[in-house]
Length: 215
Image 1 (cartoon, rainbow, N blue to C red):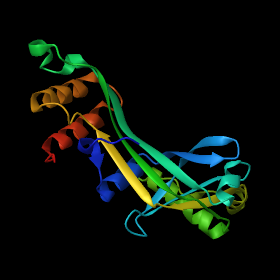
Image 2 (image 1 turned 30 degrees about the vertical axis):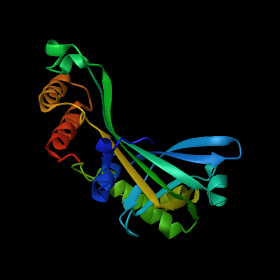
Image 3 (image 1 turned 90 degrees about the vertical axis):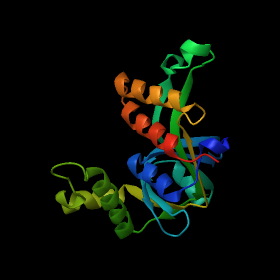
């Protein structure tokens, strides 16, 4: 991934936070037939340092299992907030006209080897962790233990676990750092008024980047 220095995010805690907030990964692997991509929710663990470990599960029928068995390296891509940025939102448009449309986004790329985990207790723990994380905001969270034991055992038998210790971790926060403060302020205002699903989150990212020392 090409990352200009001003868009680079290296703080591990920030990268992990995006993964937790947007756990559905695009998992890219190299199979015998070429590049393959699967879309899999994952749980991030902070250990081992410095980058942690990703854990997930797939159906036993998924051909991805062949790639994992071969010990291939994979790349997991996590997409955060993203929005189109109109040049009409820049206050400098009326002064110079030298503005162009762009796209703001935050994304994390995690690289590492994949390892199959067959242990049923491990798989259940992974299911419980994934479910608990995503149910946490609900008034009456559902838990794996709420389902009948025989049903859970059948479910666990149909899937297989995997983990990916992260060897390289990259973050790109392209959130209007290339704009002067006046344009950043007008972009934030326009995003808040736009009604786009990701607009509020993006406005927060632009505001945070505007306050962050550049260098």
